[in-house]
Image (cartoon, rainbow, N blue to C red; front, side):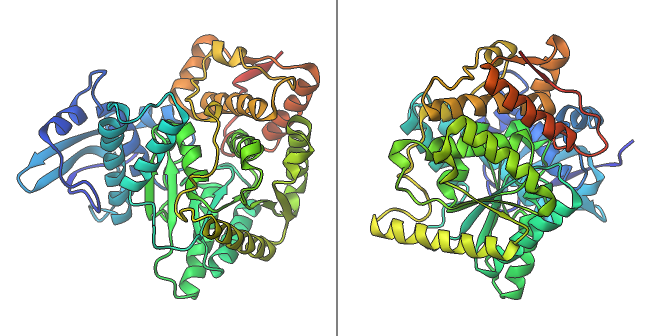
Length: 454
């Protein structure tokens, strides 16, 4: 039975004032209330340091956890009952966790009030969705207008080997030595390693304003609790806006070994960059890992060439077992981004010029019907195939770790995917390799596939 603790705290760093209407909505457990969303995301933040990638198991282990927003004369306070004991030291909540808890509250309130329930944003059109992403990031203080481009997004799996984790730290170290900041999905594994390495490098360089930005969303945060190095946390409303936030705010991307979630991110990124409107936009991408990961990237590279064509290979570089070269390549690439944006009078802090097709923006709800109906064949434009493959991998992620997806699989059996024969065999080989390398779940957890191919 996990140890638990109850307390009342004040927010740290953001959103110390709420209206009575907002407080009531955060308390309400009805369909129009935000209490359940606040509870799930808050528990994920409080669970920092306790490894799990099963969001439903986390909720079950802490079924008696409660959070209540208290309105007081001098602002709000948060009443926590039966919170994970690991979030406290000598009865006091760890400051970083208190900051993350405040960020959760800030983003939930802002998205509900200013994005989802207002006519200002048309969330069925690409322009409206991009504007929503911008406003969420700006409200969180993430967009730094006065800073030169420096933000490197690092993607990779939460379930990786110790060697791969240590390698991701080495890469982060070499990025940090070159005055580059880190943005990840904020969880463990390849999301934590680069931040840890960059943190040491920034200390060596006496750089006191290093950024360790974590971008998550409610469906995944319980399975990937924010790691303690994150000093800026943003909760986007769904996976599509989370992915767009990465590519709009970041100036380059480093991709470490991972599972279906990483494959989803790669397909999203390349699907966007292969759009003709984005052909001339510089955006450095490096796939990297230790020598033992060479086969992993060989399989990814072959799958991308088969599905998206040889042009996809022109958009990324594979560097194996050379953290310093990754650092040099990314520094040069970010400098190219800075020069391009300067020549075009573009903003450094948000990539407005990038054309993101609505197929990558509209939320996809992975159900048994929607997964079975995905068009997985090559008789369609490359960016549309990439969008559909991205949705397929997103559905598998949901079935693996998200509460709603796990429940759907238990009730109705595995998702069924249909594809043309050649693509099906390639997809099967890729997914089978992820299972064999234990990239679907944390080590020690038996993996039962949430999908079938046919």
